[in-house]
Length: 156
Figure 1 (cartoon, rainbow, N blue to C red):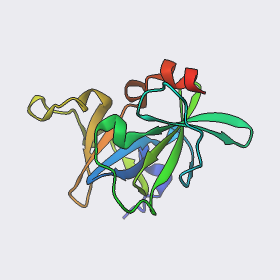
Figure 2: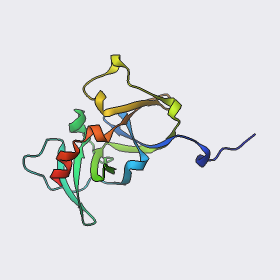
Figure 3: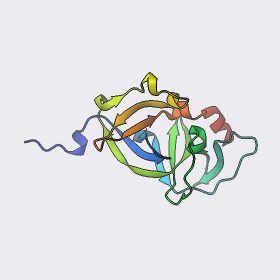
Figure 4: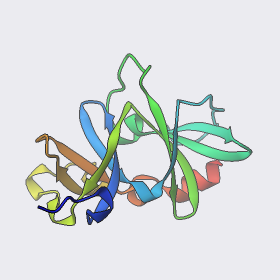
């Protein structure tokens, strides 16, 4: 019997995280790092989902609150909240999430498109859905569609 190591697994790797009661994922190749919720400087006249900007080792980064962007009620206890720093089209952005779960390997054959009957206003931000071995669904986000990069880049 052949022993398969992690590097033999084909497919993509995703960072799985929670927002509200739902599980989401982002392709690991776009993730730069995960940090605690930073102190931000608010920006006047910016969209509500832009929490502000922060200085991360000399680089100004826009921080986006995914609760506001996805219209999800934030949890009262934000002690487990984290900020995922992602790079989308050469723009670094921080996105606030409730908690980080794990890194998962996903076989492309295990991905499903979002079906018409389940579409809502946030569906356009979802690339696909993955059913985990533990039998829960993970919505794989498309940050290029989710974040108005022109607005985000202008904020920083």
